[in-house]
Amino acid sequence: MIEVKTVDYEKWFEMEEKYSLFDIKTEEGIYIWDIMRWYVNRYIYIKYTRETVSTESAKSFRFYYKGMLIIIGSFFSWITKKRNNIIFSISRNLDRENMLYDIICDDIINLLQDDIIIIDRRKALPEYRYTIEYNLVNLIKRIFISKKLSIDIFNTISHAMQSSFGEMQITYNELNKFYEDYQKEYKYYRFYFKWKKPKRIFICYDEKSVIAAAHSLKIPVLELQHSYIGRYFIGFSYPNIITKHDKRTIYPDYMLTFSDYWGKEVNTPFYTYSIGNTYFSTETDKLPANNGSILVISNMIHGEILSQIILQYMQKFPDVHINFKLHPHEFKITTKYKEFFQNQKNITVLKNEIAMNVLIAQSNIVVLIDSSTFYEVLNIGAKAAVYKVMSYKNLSNCFSHPNVYLFDTIDELHNAYIAEKKENNITFFDKFNAEKLTSLLNEIKS
Image (tube, rainbow, N blue to C red; front, side, top):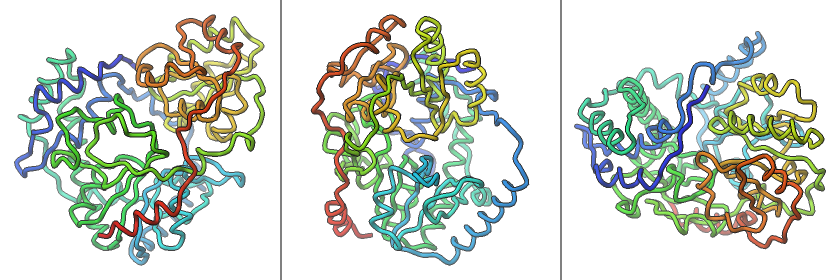
């Protein structure tokens, strides 16, 4: 089970300022708060249990055999392969040949082709579109020594959290483990980059240890936007006391965004640079027609409450087909959702069998609480129904959009379902601009 709470993000920013959390330094002079603020923040509104992360089945001999071959091959690549560019991808989408690839990194990989090393948290059994080097950090980082988190620093953070939110849900041991892992990962990546000698690092998720290690060697880091950049998305948003290139933060040299829309109203320590994205800018006339279904966008935080409201909806409106789309972090508990909906014949629980833009185009309306998919829906010109619970206000910048419907009850949801779709002329995703990116890369040299 998951215990969920609503977060007052303005109060979060006030806490960071009031208690000077960004000024906290370790004995070694490291500004520590930006390393762990995202980790601390998520524990305010969600707490995982062992049941949540349990696996569904035992691994096969083929899994272990192929996994061993991947690790051996990655060690060989680790030692011998050197390129000017390294990209950290997360391949979790299937192409038409049923091969995994990364929709965020795909444009960069195609542009740089043979001059790039692709590092991924690859799995043993699926086939991949790219030649992947498995990320060996979790295997090798164990050899590096780390220092424990100061009790005084923990008490400072705990006092700020308790004074602002009434409790500190993370224990010292949990936060200390996170900090020690960061130190080990930093040392591993610094050693790795010194050996590989890349000119640039690309990341598609906010990996502080990668950024810090690269910058210690004066290697520029470019982060690819993988989620929405909004005031209340703590991964990218900072209180007003933080300035551009603030030494108290760990930031990429540039955030490469989907379009000029992103980052204008958010305070960040980094600069944004729009390059677009091929996948998200797919022309609507190349997508399938609406088939009258409802698409539900789940994730680890919202899945339980979304499944409950959708079950109620199906009991009253059984003729409407529902596609319940799981987040990759939920794939391990697919069986749990299928069992929950087992008595409902008109629902399909999906992982990554169908591309998201296809699912959106086929749907009469898309139901969610707080997801970057919201912007994909509006960009395609579809309708979005936002369930008014938990962190739904994170999407408030588009609540006035004519195709956005807020709902509390299943009747309000159904009214949104049968409502006519309005014309749309807003664009959140531009086409990928290879010339613009190439120009930037020519300017950035380590």
